[in-house]
Image (cartoon, rainbow, N blue to C red; front, side, top):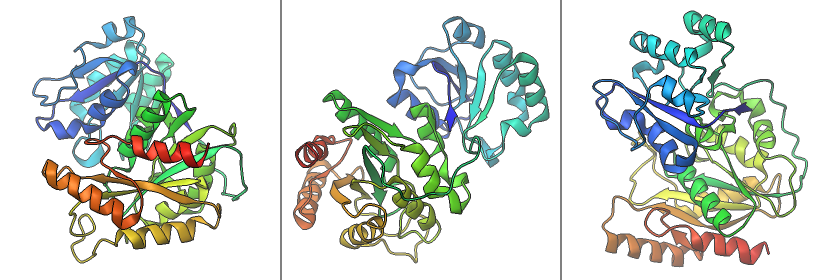
Length: 337
């Protein structure tokens, strides 16, 4: 797995669109105590609220890694940023990115990093061999977030659960399976770059044998109902061997994201299929609730939607932003005491 040194300095680049820096803003939201500051170039429209600083100042305050927290067009590092990257290496920082193109494949950066004894970390690409999954039962507890579709809040829900559980004194760790999650967790495996035969093995590697009361909160990916990404969802489900599942959904979404001819499954069908396939490696897997993104609904309609869905499923239903996830942790505490 990739292991990142923090504190971080977040690189926001020079894009006018604040959404281009959503990785940086996600890191700043969930791991603000790991962040020294931000580096913005002229024209940058994003702002995490962290102090602006250069590389020397960040290094002097103990920064270990410059995180490229912005997604440039085409997924490639622009040539105009090369002087910035070299300056960060000169200051003693590692470089980490989740781009489609690899930092290590840039000859100038690779040479500069080698000369300075710094690391280039491409979190989208696995760092070393991954075993084939075995399905062997292992100690510890695991929760996996699953969804009706992509981009329905599986990472956000997992992080909210980790936060709530830790605040209550539980031994719980968020396990990252995507590039933004890896920056937030400080380690992980980006499973969308893992060869399909090894996805379940990657999940086993992410959530190894642990103390009986320890919870790994595994970040879900894709959906069993997505025609493109069902394979990675199934691999995570089998490899993580979850004791508990949380169903993630976006209220009023009309169809699979970006695929108008593909209708979303019913919540009941999604629950049934995840339970049926999940029982292969954990016969005792169960749903403990649903996490629903109601951001497109007014407050009164969102409250009504959550209440009606909770009655429909006979499970607690929350919006991790509007209501928090405490009812889901209440179920964990009562069922797994």
